[in-house]
Every structure is written in structure tokens, then in C-alpha cells.
Length: 119
Image (cartoon, rainbow, N blue to C red; front, side, top):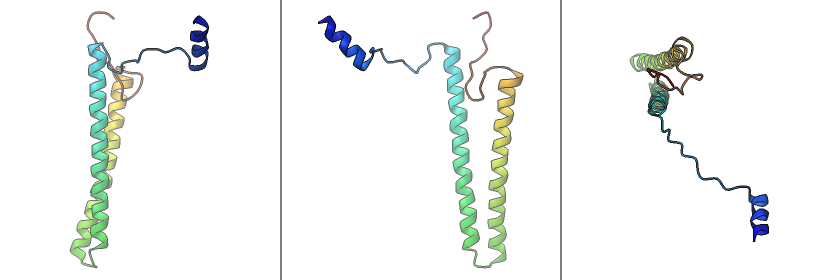
């Protein structure tokens, strides 16, 4: 019987229990939550900007040569492009502050909260 167990472990490898992705340390859990919130915000903002940009392009196409509609469509497209740059600058500033200045984390969007006392 031992031979059969050794043969199956050679074929399939050793079976390990599943690793939980939920951190047990409260500071790590809070950092993961904040990181997730920031990532979701950036995704929603990028999606909204893409929709706004496409809406401006659609209005441009359907303006039919009307100067007023054309200028409104150009303004929407300009605002969407400015919004993209604002999100990029805000994310870059957040990364510089958390990684380089405060040294909270080694990477940009994953960090643990600092603790008083010791490790």
C-alpha cells in the first residue's frame, strides 16, 4: 500500500491544503482593502472616460455640420482627454508618495499600514 501512495505522489505531486488569500494581519488586510478600492476607482474612472470620449465622438459624427453641436462635441472630447491625464497624474503622485516618500510599500498599489510599537 505504501508503494501505491509513493507512486501517486510521484505522478501527481504532494497535495497541499489550499492557501487562503485573506490576510490574517489587520494592517495587511486594511492595506489590501485600500489597494482594492483604489484599483476599482481607477477602473471605473477609466471606463467613464472611455464612454465620455466615445459619446463626444458620436456627437461629432452626428453634428451634421452644426457649429454649436460640433463645438460641444469637441469640448467633450477635450474634457475626456484632460480627465485621462488627471487620473494618470493622480495615480503617479499616489505612487510616489506611498512608495518613495512614506515607504509604505515596495510596489505602488499593494501596501500595508504602518504600525506603532514593533513588528
